[in-house]
Image 1 (cartoon, chains in turn purple, cyan):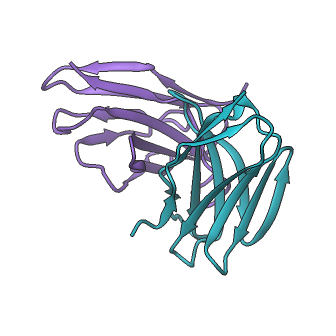
Image 2 (tube, helix red, strand yellow):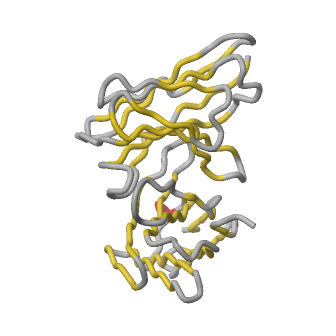
Length: 113
Length: 112
């Protein structure tokens, strides 16, 4: 079955630690996205990538970094500079940035130890 | 003012009722409209994807867009307990890369 796989489902971060969230898709989509979801705030865009080896900052990129070395993969690193990282992180993909709707993975919940 | 506004609910209805979920938006350039269903601790699942004004039907779900009043609706017929979830509306403009703007979601509970 085609889809978007996020791992791990739950993640805990210690002070001063960087953590990486995985996102893999087998939908042959060119564009991929990372969102953060907080209660009552809706989805906020962290980073997006329209094509391999290219990515742009979204609305709340500070304290996060990404890479896009393969079409299928778009990992997100939450750095120690992100002071409020506790949230539900969602990865999405679409055929292109202006083609078709975005489809989502099942998310990673990140908490602070 | 948020670009996409949605009543957070919760909205409780008895099983079998017709559910009406609504959003308003402020950006008149929005051309694409989406509804997602999100179960607890899961990612949003695309229900409906529409372009411009009009109605679109898929099984028990009907999406309606009224661009003159900047109002989008999702109707669920014969609601089931399995429809209990949070429903997100979303919109974006056409042409080039344009980000998708999401509403905050309406929580729906269908009571058996």
